[in-house]
Image (cartoon, rainbow, N blue to C red; front, side, top):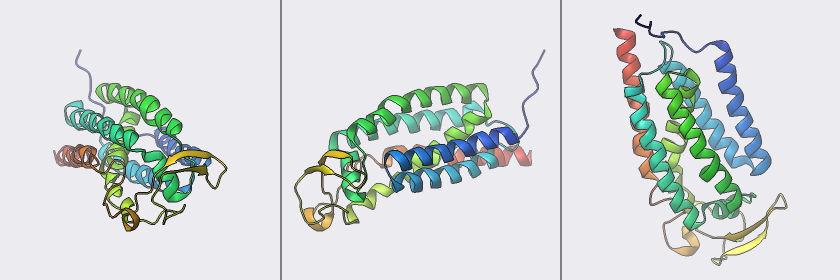
Length: 224
């Protein structure tokens, strides 16, 4: 017997779960790191939520449409994270914003939790799970398209010892001891660089592709 395609929009419970996930991530980011994750995660989550509601209003997006850009985005994201780790992204962010983001915290989120979430999301997209579509939309927008922020970081004056070019280890505002905090402010280094900048465009391109392809697919579905 041929199955009937799911053409239903996300239900109220799914919307609540998606919204609560964004709020929980923002709250945890605030407690563990500070305000930057609230802005980044909250903004990306809100846009991702709107994208998800728009593209899933006639049912899940076909895996043939959404899986290729999603898998490519997370694959390129891992390459990008490698540069960030090797160049000291988390300590550099700690110095830039006076927050307690250590290398350990960076690895726990992006090297361990992240790949597990990506794998489960890919399985959910393949099976047509609507909440997986929300996670994909968030990744397309946040870790994908929003990587352009790396090009702004070298222009920002660090909150901690902006005129000192040397790498430092000290306690930040919340009392966390952060080691090897580099200063990448172009005003001191004379070099336009911030950890992750060279590979930032790699997840951006498939992330934007994912946004565009899902919007186009649903536009065709709604007009068909």
